[in-house]
Length: 319
Image (cartoon, rainbow, N blue to C red; front, top):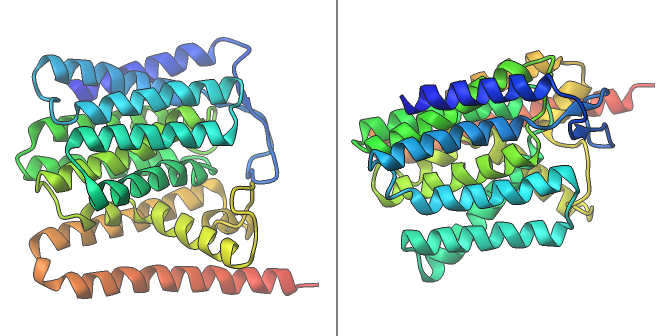
C-alpha cells in the first residue's frame, strides 16, 4: 500500500499546485534545453509522496534500518526547497550535502576510510543527479526505473522494508513523470533531484552493507547518469574549464542539440538504463563473470560516447 499512497499523494499534490499561480519558475539559461519558463515544483510532490510512504512503513516497523537515510534525505529536501525559492550560495549547498552524507553514513555504521569513500560517493551522486536533470522525462524516468530495480533486488534479497521503500520512491517518481514526460508541464527542481540523488547513493550503500546486492549493483543501475556526468566533468576539468559553471556539454544535452527530441532522448536513455539493469541482475546470479560483464558495460558506453562525439565534431565543422 505504501507505493500506492506515494503515487496518489504525488499526483494529487502536483495537480493541485499546477492549478495555482505564482509558482517558482525555472527560467531558461545557458545550460538549458528548454525555452519556456516552467514551474519547478515537481520535487515537492515526489518528496510528499515518499514522506507519506515512509511514515506508513515506519509505523509498520519496516523502516528501522533505513531511518537515517530517510531523515537525511528530507533534511536535504528542505534545504533544496529554499534553494528553489530563494537561491542559496553554492558553498552552503555543498556543506549541507556533506553534513547529511556524513551524519547518515555514521548512523549506518561506516567509519574510517569507508566513511570517507562513502561520503564522497554520496555527495557526488547527490550532485550528479542534479546535473543530469536537464531534459523532459529524463530524471523522473531514471528514478522510476532505477528505484524500481532496487525494489525488485531488495525483494529478491528478502529485505521487505527496503523493497517497499524503494518501490514507493519509484511510484512517486512515476506520478511526477505524468507531468514531466515531454512536453513537460513541471520540472523536478533541486527539491527533487538532490534528495533523489542522495537516496540512490545512500540506499545503494545500505543494501550493499546488508548483503542485499553487490556493491556494483546500484552503480550499474544508475550508470547512465553516473557515467555521463563523471566523464563530462572529467573532460571539462582536463580542459581547464570551471566545472561548477553551467554548461551544455553533457552527452544527453548534445543528443538534443544534435536534433533529437526530448521524447526520443528519454526513450533511448530508458532503454540504456534497462540494459544496465539487466547487467546488474546478471552480476547477482553470475558473480564469477563480473570482469566480462564490466567490460561489456564499459564497451557499451564507449561506443555510445564515440558515436555522439563523432557526430558532434561533424556538426561543429559544418559551414
